[in-house]
Each structure stands twice: as structure tokens, then as C-alpha cells.
Image 1 (tube, rainbow, N blue to C red):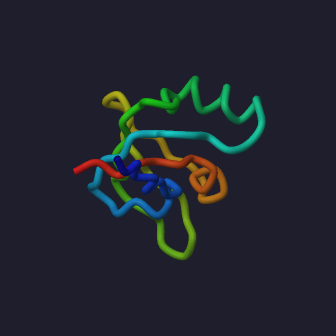
Image 2: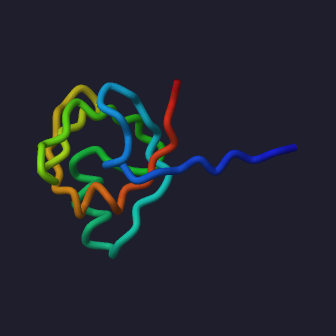
Length: 82
């Protein structure tokens, strides 16, 4: 039996592809802030757009759009969904 650990940072998810949040790296404050935005382990997110030149990442979670900076997006690990 093989376990697929194909997690990647949220900013590496191609626009339009959904992914399931698997882990959040960082402190408790960051995890609580992201949870208030609906971004928590198990949630399905979809990258809508990525700003040019290392700009923000626009994503959709629970029907709402949220913009995150690249530094925060790199701390959110997702598993790409088909």
C-alpha cells in the first residue's frame, strides 16, 4: 500500500485547480487568523489568480474570495485534487 504525500505550498497550486488544505505551518496566531477566513485543515480551496512579480494569491474557499500574501500562502500546504 502506497501513501501519496503530494503536498505542495498553496502558491504552487496552478490557478483554477482545487486543493485540500492538509497542514498550516506557522504559529497559533496565523492558524487562528486563517481559520477565521475559512482556511483550515480539510477545507477545499481553489486558486483563482496569482499576482505578477510575487504579488498576492487570490483564492476561493467556501464560496468567498480571499487574498493572501505569498509569504502566508507558502505556509499553507495543500493536496491537489483532480
